[in-house]
Image (cartoon, rainbow, N blue to C red):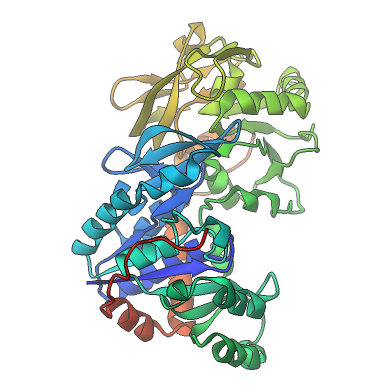
Amino acid sequence: MGAVMLQGTGSDVGKSVLVAGLCRVLVKRGLRVLPFKPQNMSNNAAVTSDGGEIGRAQALQAIACGVAPHTDMNPVLLKPQADRTSQLIVHGQVRGTLGAGNFRQARGELLGEVLASYNRLRQACDIVVVEGAGSPAEINLRAGDIANMGFARAAGVPVVLVGDIDRGGVIAAIVGTRTIIDPADAVMIEGFIINKFRGDPALFADGYRQIESLSGWRGFGVVPWLAATARLPSEDAVVLEHGKARAGDRKQIACPILPRISNFDDLDPLKLEDGVELHMVPPGQPIPAEAALVILPGSKATIADLAALRAEGWDIDVLAHHRRGGMILGICGGYQMLGRGIADPDGLEGPASTTRGLGLLDVETTLHAHKALRSVSGIAMGAPFHGYEMHMGRTSGPGTQRPFAMLSDGRCDGAINAAGTVFGSYVHGLLADAEQRRALLSRMDVKAGGMNYGFSVEAALNEIAAALEEHLDIDALVALARAERSVSGPAGGRA
């Protein structure tokens, strides 16, 4: 039994993908492997086999390991919502709300529960591959840390630092991390990985040796730019701002990027379809009038995001699209926005309030503390699907007499307007099934392909694993994971 932890020189350096790829490499070598992230902050989550929720990246890493996602893989999940607060999820269940004032103290008090989850995983496999959050170089966050060095030192897990060469300054990022972190933290770092390299790695040979010399850490390899990463679900909403529209004669599907957008990987399967173009609309831009379908996505704070939608003028665009006879699909929070109104009597998303919806479905939603977390399957638009529910609202009204889906447990889901142009559903992951995608796109006179999204993800993981096997010293990483480390004491450190 053993473990290795990948931390980064910053956010979005590719830790999540490297952990997923390394998990798949080790599984292919015949090892029992499990992923782990002590603390995550993301509104993109997945339902687990034990009835909780974890970050989407850890669910993907579980797929890479060939196992079902479990709440122990991400024991602390923070889901940002309105008013500078985050919903606190511990072992997959809502435990309350954290604000800026109590965040650090509450986080530090969770270390025992984090270690309990980690120890259960470690006893169940050969190697645990751990992902850090952000960067250990954020020394202003070190006190009470449970995501990076606080965890690594408490659990005695060796660390490999990941640097992103594509963004520039990777030598300074790695060596600078070595310079500013606590010396006791630096001892935990055994080496580094250069990620996202474009071109011939030999051109970086001198820089690689200089990092080794200046940091005193060994290099485990240079990973090339991995095109297959684009075919994986992403956890970080920042990637939504990176995409560029492709040219060509395709029907356009538009989705506004709301401030608290969640579970936006619902839309990833649409990228498999050559007949459509998914346009994620950033703030400051109108929803294109030529769009054939507008999707209102999930939201962590529906009332706040509905206010943001109106502030951007997107409500005017959506209503104009409806008057032109265009199709609209609302998923989870987006479904709630399409109704007549949303009530939050207990102040779950902020001050207690009631707000007017877009009025395109004859339903109303009341937010409740109980959170629905379950896998579901059924029939919608005449086609089967498998997905999951993750919401705190209850929606009712005459519109539900025309349900969007019939679930296999006998319940009805969602609503459809009388004209059959506006759809609302609580089901996430709906479009991963090729038949369900085909049923939706046929209403736009688009012929859909036949690949299930899961097959595409599996192929991408195998492609990434092959690249890591070629470009990293996997034998050395396995030996590092299996090396015994002594626990260095309390997870304190610099403030």
